[in-house]
Length: 252
Image (tube, rainbow, N blue to C red):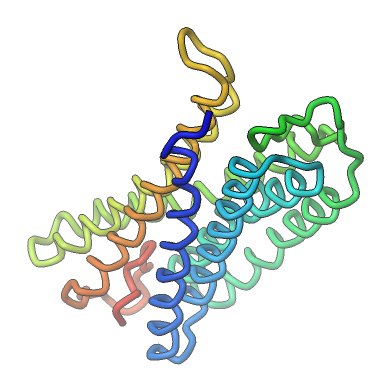
């Protein structure tokens, strides 16, 4: 039975479009800074993933739709966002090296997702599910490695930045902004974990996947809110050579 929760991925996709426009405008005004371009790419794939969720939930699932959803969400969902943080956390040379090495894993995972046989009997016609992936090594260790990498730089970087900024009263707005980014980045993961659990107590499997939809929506809203707070905050006073945490330089 269709409920209003099943339309949430559509709202998430629409929000992602406007967020991308905001990021690209910011990137243009900052000479196409790589961290902003990577963030725009991340929000793009975020929106692509929720767009596939919309189609699957409202019109039914197919093997190809599920394959594309898994690629956009599990492989590319958080990686570009985290790479943007890498370019903020490190010098350009270090960021290039980290990105080059991590891209190898992402490319391997992407190729594998499109080459793996799919388990048709595991296809759920009402919701997306990673259980159709035939090559189990894609789900472990490839996908976890990408997600752990993303969590370290996206969530970890935002948390460290928030703590550093909170110590300076005039930087509190940036502290709140980076804290919102950290919280927002964790919500899709929490929703995805709940969706994988399946039936739990009185909650149905469909109900569990709806938690993912809500988590993705709230996560994107919080990340955009955090971004806006950071861009409107006073410029941080940094010593030359200091590391710049996730989203610290978005207004520079």
